[in-house]
Each structure stands twice: as structure tokens, then as C-alpha cells.
Image 1 (cartoon, rainbow, N blue to C red):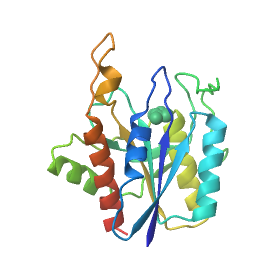
Image 2: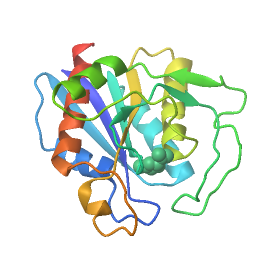
Image 3: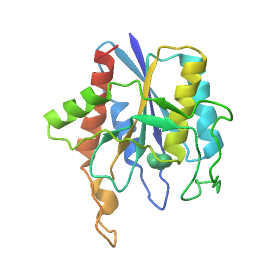
Image 4: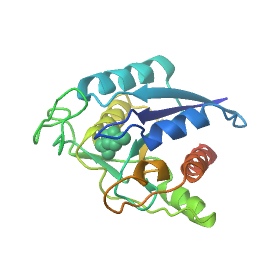
Length: 205
Ligand code: PCA
């Protein structure tokens, strides 16, 4: 059995839900052939989230790590290409941290590339009419931080685990009462997207 670790974040920035967590909770109930899915629900807390994900990696040694997060203004499901070694928070995290231009890991490499099959994931999504594209920046907030920390941990420990990050747009219920226009996908579409990403990542294992 292959082990997949799936992570998602709690709500932040005034939202009451996070599409990544909604997807994680749905995926948790689905069974995949030959794969066990271990899920990890992360707080939008700079230090606690990082400690939790590294602890889980050490404990469970997954074959694949797929990290999920919300990118509220995006129109498409976006596998991230690269994680960069910088924390520069546009808004505070849920406990008030707001670093400006700090290294995530002092003295560590500038960046790491995703080792998920990002082209296959995008192609698989587009094949079923789910809007998708590779993103070349995961930002400089919590999502990039977790993505970077995981890739650095794997590199330092010379692990062959495939890992990467996928940003998800808002789901419809998040935008329905907003004052301005925001793009969104249906809950079902977001869940289907994550499922396709898991299957594409496993197929490459
Ligand atoms: N998105 C944020 C952090 C938590 C989340 O879901 C980000 O893109 O950094």
C-alpha cells in the first residue's frame, strides 16, 4: 500500500471555511485502490503548522505528500511549481504573526521545485473540464512556508517522497454574499480536482 499524506488549512482572512479543508474532509471518506490516505488538518499558525507537518512526516514517512490551500482570487486549480525560502505575510496569520522578508530556514536553498507530476495533474483536470493551470508562485504566506519546509525536510533527509502544493479557488458558498465579484468553483469540482491530483501523483509512483 502506498501512503499519501494530504494536508489542508483551517479558515483564515475572515472566511468561515477553507476549500482545502472541505476537500480533505471529503477525501477522507473515499477509498483509493492500493493507497492509504493520511490526513492532517493544519492551523493558520506559522509555527504550529510547520511543527505539525514535520512531525507527521517523521512519524509516517509517506510516499507522496499533497498539500492543499486556498487561493481565494484564483479562477483555476493551481499546482504550484516552486516553493521559495521567504516568509512575507500580507496579512497576519490566525494568531497574529506577520513576518516581513524573513527566511523560512536560515541559510537553506533559495527554492525547491515540486516533485508532483504538475503537468499531468493539470492535463487530467482539464480533460474533465476543471479549470487548471500551473502556478509559478505559491506566495509568501503560510502555504508557501509549509510547502518549502516539507521540500527542505525531504531534501535534507534524502527522501524520495514526491511532494508538492496545490492551491484551490474559493467554493461558491464563500463568494455568494461578498460585496464584489470573486471567482469560485463548486464544492464537488474542488473535491474531484483533489481526487484527480491524488490519482495522477500515485500513478507516477
Ligand atoms: N491559504 C494560505 C494559507 C492558508 C491557505 O489555505 C496561503 O495561500 O498561503
